[in-house]
Length: 270
Ligand code: AMP
Ligand code: ZN
Ligand code: FE
Ligand code: FE
Image (cartoon, rainbow, N blue to C red):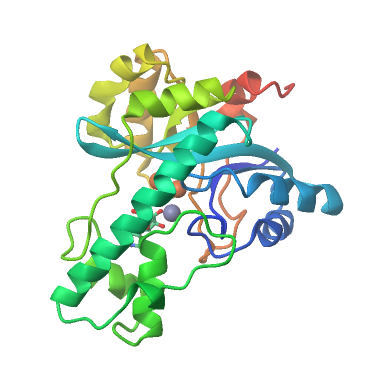
């Protein structure tokens, strides 16, 4: 079984609609995917409808909640949530407001840097619930300010860049509580190795797992994270965090061997 448990669609900042994502997963030979858009669960049902029509893949419900931990931004994956649960809806509504305010502030930063761009120039898909830096990067390319998406990040938008404003999210404790209330399993998305110091504390708040396997991570780093997760009594998961750009979906995947424990928690027989 091939799985990819961290994927974005046009409901946040991915390039493919849920239906296109399902088609790409089938073309790439994935048996199971999790739709994990930033701060919204609205893309799950459309993905499931498309998967029912196409006869696969299995679609796990997910969301990637933007949270804060001691003033730093952390991303929290919620697996197996009820996508319609009020706790998730409340989180998403707050996230959407914060992201709109942040977009206006980043556009103002760009203007102060001499870039002519208005908030209205930042186009989003009609389904988008979660506007972010990739939308802004595409607008900068579209208006000819920079030649490429990567250049938009390199010059302006990357963490620490001159037009970057961090996402403000609720405290991670609230994120874990929202995931748990919605019947889901809370997993820390793409932590850095130094974050391992916080694993035990977050487990105390209800964290269940840590995303240790990613396409770009060094094997030594994955192993060290895995070790720290186990020490803290947390399970390990993996996902590509794919947003639609090459390499193709399915060229990287995890198997039951890697994520069997999570599958058990989600009620998938192994
Ligand atoms: P945001 O949620 O608005 O902070 O945007 C985060 C998203 O921006 C990530 O999920 C990536 O898709 C993208 N991103 C962040 N940093 C970079 C970077 N240095 N280069 C390219 N894309 C990036
Ligand atoms: Zn993203
Ligand atoms: Fe993330
Ligand atoms: Fe992500």
